[in-house]
Image (tube, rainbow, N blue to C red; front, side, top):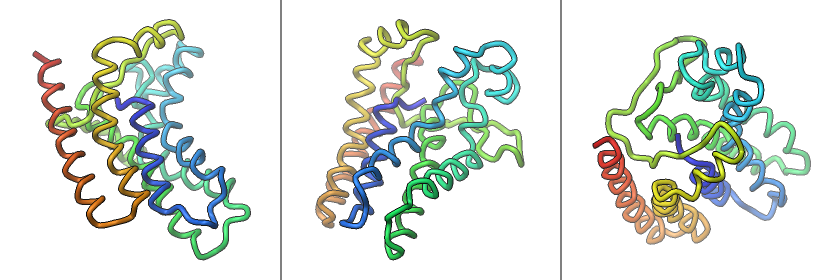
Length: 210
């Protein structure tokens, strides 16, 4: 899975792409919340345990992660609910673009986790289909978690985790900057730098496997 840091950077980039005077200060955090909501399955599985692990993972073949919260269905429901709750005070003209950007932010979470190329795979089309999809060409750094708060904190300071944060900054950071500048040169530069980060993340994934 991609880390909270990576998902948050992607969310800020999406928000900046539709930012305007009409969008209230709360909207960046709405995007961040939607981007990270699927990963609530990690603490929920740790806290509830037992049969809830099976329910969260849609079968129990994992530790509760990458289950129904990582489906396209959940992403669209979460984005719709967040938009309806936060749209008060947002004028009608920008509503459509904010709603679309929020939906894309939510949909990006399972795609990024799929891009890690590890774990039990992603059931994108649940409940319509149960097939788990695996990425044969990993392009996103792996995040490191734990089954307790202490394990989680220690994992964030490991060399592999810090390297992953750096790669995520290279992959997503340029798009955030480009969205703020809103110029063709900035977008072109972001594409080049981000592509280099994706290639580096793929090389890291190959190194971890070997």
